Length: 276
Ligand SMILES: Nc1ncnc2c1ncn2[C@@H]1O[C@H](COP(=O)(O)OP(=O)(O)OP(=O)(O)O)[C@@H](O)[C@H]1O
Image 1 (cartoon, rainbow, N blue to C red):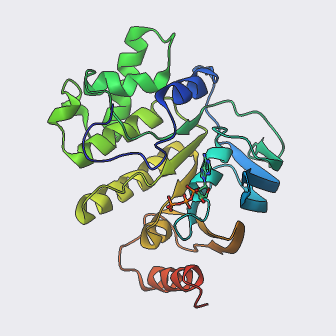
Image 2 (image 1 turned 30 degrees about the vertical axis):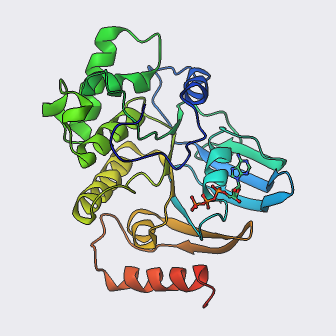
Image 3 (image 1 turned 180 degrees about the horizontal axis):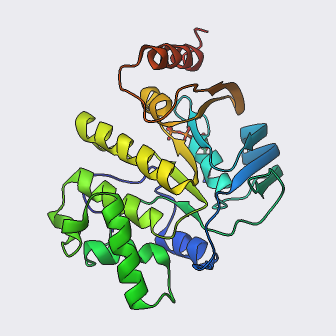
């Protein structure tokens, strides 16, 4: 049941589908989590007559922060669903790779960040849900507190979601996605419903947790400035293909208003709008 005005852009993912996705990934919490990279070869996705992705080749090194942008309906969410295994390609293949680029099953979770909170669970319990079933309660509580500290929300751990602001709810959702120390985190418009200032604060928080935890991140966003601020690399999808693959040559943390980033943002917008 959604809380607040934000609806997942992937409304067709049911709770049962997400539960099954997470349950299928038993995690060894003793092992040090490692980032999971991706290798795509000739990936195609067709819905009936609609060929949405037309033979994509893409290597995402372990630990990279990749952003996917493009016009509405170009296939961003479809690609993200394929990357995390929520859907199957109709052609080509997707493999996980380790830090050396060799094919390897991830030793940590592939997590799809889901913005909805459970209104009948406290903040801490909402976060502990991200650990899945079969985790000892005390361990779950401790890890949830750790994750809440990471998103600077320790003081709200006993609160109900309905008592939080939109930005605080997004932070709880982020803590739930991070609590299992994912190898890859998929984010589909995670900050879409936030006001501009809260959004900037959340962007900085996402950057900090990514730098600290070292997972691979794949972000789908309509906001080109956000993509350039957060990602190491931005790809533009157009008519089922990658029309631009751009490295962002700036160390993190980045400053909002950096002229080099503004220039890159302009090039990306020109490509998306067909002016390049
Ligand atoms: N489950 C589905 N069944 C049929 N068609 C689908 C399905 N999912 C996506 N599509 C189609 O695939 C195309 C790409 O959709 P997708 O949601 O991936 O685009 P998007 O780039 O994420 O769009 P937006 O930016 O508007 O969120 C659209 O034409 C959409 O109608």
